[in-house]
Image (cartoon, rainbow, N blue to C red):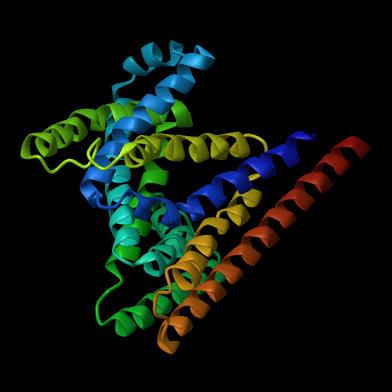
Length: 306
């Protein structure tokens, strides 16, 4: 199989698994959101260390120790991913799947804003139009909910910032996840120990199936991340940008057709506007990438002719 096609399949698998997460976390009830989060951190470390052990890939750790700046960035990434995971688990287990999908729909637009505010990048006119439409969608949903869509905004802001920090750190997915979960391990184990002492821990007290599902949180966290990494090194960034919409689309469908969350007309209007914004954003990105490739091809042709 050609590497590009294989990369696309890896990308589809990663985003499909992320998109189906709303079906997994409710299976862990009666565990609370914080207990699920703590188990996800602990078992993710076990899973990713097992993967690194199979690959016999440990030399990166010594190199990382020589770069305190990268360690600091990964500690910050750990805090951000904890916030993102915690809010998402809470949202899914309290019937806010649709709102969480909105958060991941607007994440690309949040990332663009970060580029403007933090990296001093300049937006093209159509990008500004997409960001403006996204802001209108947020206002409409705020009116619909009677409050700001804080779950969506928290997910988008935390994941957008997480992506920016990870890009700056420049550390591989498995290696980064190892450090991030290692940073979070002591607080997670401390909380799980506290639950055990209070007699409120569900781990081992609700049957073998529930225990295995809690432990499986590590696998369902690590596998899509590794699939994403495999996709990212095989396909263009524009392709990844298109594939990323698979996850929030599946989350939205889960919320509407499986969880049966209420969708009044005003909420539909908000989502239609954000989909329009993403359509404009995607069209502009593809158009710009095509023009850039054409310009490169023309320069190469001129150089060859001369």
